[in-house]
Amino acid sequence: MYVTLQIKRRNMTNLLVLYLITLTFSSVCLGSKNIVLFSDNENKLQVEHGKITTENSLNLNFYEDCIDKDLSVCTPKPKGNENYLRFFSQSEKQECQNFEQVAQSMNDVLQFCVDLGNSSWYGGTETTYQYWPLNKLDMTDKPFVTRNVDSQAVVESYFFNSNGYYIHIDESVPLFLDINGPRPGKMCFTAKVVAPYRKVRNAMLYRICKYKNARVAHERAIKDFLGMPSSIPDPYVIKYPIWSTWARYKVDIDTSIVRKFAQEIIDQGFPIGTLEIDDNWETCYGSAEFNTTRFENISGLVDELKLKGFKTSLWTHPFINLECPTHEMAKNKGYFVKSTSGSVNTTWWNGEASYIDFTNPEAATWWSNTLHSLLAKSGIDTLKFDAGEATWSPQLPEYHDNDLTYYPENIVNAYLRTIATFGNGVEYRPSRRSQEFGRLIRMIDRESRWDYQLGLPTLITSLIQMNMVGYSFVLPDMIGGDGNFDLPPSKEMYIRWLQANLFMPVVQFSYTPWDFDQQTVNICSPLFKIYQSKDTKYFSKFTI
Ligand SMILES: *[C@@H]1O[C@H](CO)[C@@H](O)[C@H](O)[C@H]1NC(C)=O
Ligand SMILES: *[C@@H]1O[C@H](CO)[C@@H](O)[C@H](O)[C@H]1NC(C)=O
Ligand SMILES: *[C@@H]1O[C@H](CO)[C@@H](O)[C@H](O)[C@H]1NC(C)=O
Image (cartoon, rainbow, N blue to C red; front, side):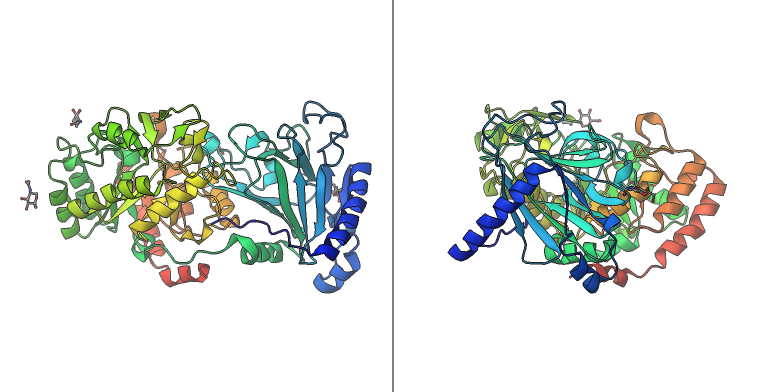
C-alpha cells in the first residue's frame, strides 16, 4: 500500500556525476541556511507552465546541523559529523527534486523547514481543531502517526500549497511536525528515532515538486503516488441515511429500543435506510456474541427490521477486554499486539483490553471469521469498524510483522486489509496511504458545539481536509454531533448541521428532528428530499 520514493539506481558514471552534484549542493546547503528551490529552472518552467514569479519560490531551511544553535528546537550533533545531506538529487521529473538525508547515528535529529509565506497550505492530518488552511494551525513536535490523541486518525505526509508546490515525505521517515511551532511562520519536518517510532536507521526522505498551480500539483500527486479509490462504497449507504443508536441512546440499547427507533422513523415519514446498532450489544467487549439479556433474539429482530425495509449494521472494534473468556485463548495463541517488554495490555475507552495483531495473518483470519459467522447467524448486513489507530497498541509495540520500515503504521494497513473482506457497506476511520480502499471513511466523532473543537464548522474543514489527502468517500459524523456529556445539540444547531451535511456524501442521523419539535420536522423533511435526489452514479467519477 505504501509508495516508496525511488532513488533511481545509477550506474558507475552516474554515481560519479551524483557525487559531484552532492558535493556542490552540500556546500551550498551547509554554507547558507536558506535555499530557494528551482531558481535555475525558472525560465524553463515559465515556458512550460506560464508565468511564475520569484515571490512564489519556496524557501527551504535546513537545520540538520543546527546552524542557528537554537537548542530549544534542535539537538546539536556531535562535532565531526558535518555531512548529513547525502543526496540532493534532481529527480526523473524536471518539476521535482528528491532528497535523502541519512543521519550518521540513531541519536541524530534531522530537520528541514519551509516558509509558509503568503501561500495557503493543505494536506497533513485529521486533527481536533481542524482550522483551514494549515497556516492557521499551531503545533509542535506532533508525531506523524495515526493515533487516538488529538483525533489524528487520517494521516498523510503530503502537503501542497496555493502556488503549486507539493511536498511528500516518505512514509518510512520517523516524522514529527511543527506548524508555527518554535519557528513561527514555518512548517518544520523533523526525523528522530524516539517513541512512537522504532527504526533501524534515521533518514529523511522526501520529494518537492513545483507545478503551475495547486490543482496541477495535486492532480500530479494523485497520479504519481496518492492513488484513487478502486471501487465505490455500497450505493445504498450513500443514497439512504444511516440511523445510529449512539448519540440518542448511548450504551442503553436493547431489542425494544431498536424496534421503537425503527418504528418512529417510519411513523414520522423519514426515509428508511441502514439501522446501525452501536455500542453495547456484546456480552463483553470483543466476545462477538450478543448479550441475550439485551438482545434475546437478534436474528428475529433483524428479520423484523428487514420486513420494514431497513438494512442493518453493527458497531465493532479491534479489542478483546481482559475479562472476556476468549482473551486467554487468544493471548496463548499470540493473537495480540505485545509491547517490547512483552505486555499485551492496553486501555481504550471501554476498559482494559488487548489489541488484535492484524499483522499476524492467523490472528486476522481468526478475528474476521468470528465476525463473519456472527453476521451469517444474525443476518446483519454490515459493520461499523471503530478505532484501529496505531497508538492503541501497548507501547512500544512489537508486531508479528517485525519489518520496521513503515512502523508503527503497518498495523493500520493490516487492519484495513482485514476489514476489506466485509464488502463495500462497511465504514472505518483510520488511514495511512489507503486511498484505493474505496470504502466510507468516517470522521472522528463530532461534538455538539459551534466552535472548532470538533464542532459544526469542522464538519466542512474536516471533509475537505480528508478530500485533499485523497479520501473522497467521507462519512460525516452524526447530525448534531454526538451530544457528548449529556449536552445534546440545540434546535438551531441541529438544523444548521443537517443543512451542511446535505451537501456531503452520506447522511447519518442519531438525534432525530422529532427530538426537538414539529417545526424542526417541517424544516428538515423537505431538505432531506434534496439530498435524496442526488445521483449516486456521480461517485464513480472518483474511482480509477
Ligand atoms: C507577503 O505579501 C506581502 C504583501 O504583498 C509582502 O509584503 C511580503 O513580503 C510577502 N511575504 C512573503 C514571505 O512572501
Ligand atoms: C447483559 O446485559 C444485562 C442487562 O443490561 C447486564 O445486566 C449484564 O451484565 C450483561 N452482560 C452479560 C454477560 O450478560
Ligand atoms: C427468533 O425470532 C424468529 C422470527 O421472529 C423466530 O422465528 C424464532 O423462533 C425466534 N427464535 C427464538 C430462539 O426465539
